[in-house]
Image (cartoon, rainbow, N blue to C red; front, side, top):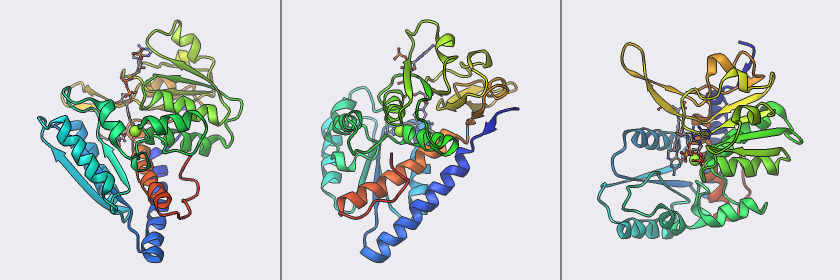
Length: 297
Ligand SMILES: NC(=O)C1=CN([C@@H]2O[C@H](COP(=O)(O)OP(=O)(O)OC[C@H]3O[C@@H](n4cnc5c(N)ncnc54)[C@H](OP(=O)(O)O)[C@@H]3O)[C@@H](O)[C@H]2O)C=CC1
Ligand SMILES: Nc1nc(=O)c2c([nH]1)NC[C@@H]1CN(c3ccc(C(=O)N[C@@H](CCC(=O)O)C(=O)O)cc3)C=[N+]21
Ligand SMILES: [Mg+2]
């Protein structure tokens, strides 16, 4: 393997430690404990795993963690009234509604109901608009985690060619905004892109957020490129059981890339660390206190 391994798990541990230090200071000096509420509607085994690890990490950082597990059949109105309650709860500084929500619930309506100041996912249209116009906002956790790893590896990203594969509201689009803010030349590719391998071959930075196991292969990658793999795909193992793989064919691409994130142990742990960071940031802003440095975009 030629590529440097970008260890998201270790980086996430250092982010969580810095978050924990800031939390201790808030508690000791101001008597304020940041609080995060995670809302899960229905039973989705993958979502339950994430929600559990979010809760655990939140408590480990010294924050208050509240989980609301609602029945699959919960009405949109009941979910909206829970959000309203959390918006008014002064002990809660961050609210996350785990996606996807069941089909009978309008996700856009739910996200719009969250107080933008408590929107630690950065999915509220007001935060999306603030980010898009270069103003202070809550920044989506997954793209923020990717950005932190890229900045740590490269220092400045200015002038680099970045190709983001995927245009979702939760990963691809905000990722592109952050890279643009750091003065990359940004291309967003998607399922209708013509000659995707040719587009990706121009990149100095590739962020793959597609949901297709091992789609990106070595022949798409210019030697030395930094490859960030957001994909989380559970596939069948030969001989039974399942394992997680990314959108990037790691064994193949790591022979030509300059640096690469693994799956698991790359972007996923950084997403959770950034959720904690955003909760502390939201808490500081709500109380007019100095924000932690290096934990926002
Ligand atoms: N590590 C983490 O913390 C997180 C990981 N994820 C993972 O990241 C991946 C992407 O998530 P998300 O953005 O929510 O997914 P979406 O399904 O919302 O978006 C996928 C994007 O990929 C594009 N796409 C699909 N097929 C192709 C193709 N053959 N060629 C090029 N582009 C294609 C789609 O294009 P089009 O718009 O044209 O349909 C779409 O823009 C998933 O594996 C998800 O599990 C997600 C969130 C957090
Ligand atoms: N409102 C909302 N916000 C989200 O941020 C959100 C969401 N909904 N819905 C689902 C996606 C997915 N997501 C992940 C978080 C952590 C890992 C993670 O920690 N992954 C580990 C592996 C975990 C495992 O073994 O299953 C890793 O990559 O090393 C993965 C995926 C957040 N999401
Ligand atoms: Mg996210």
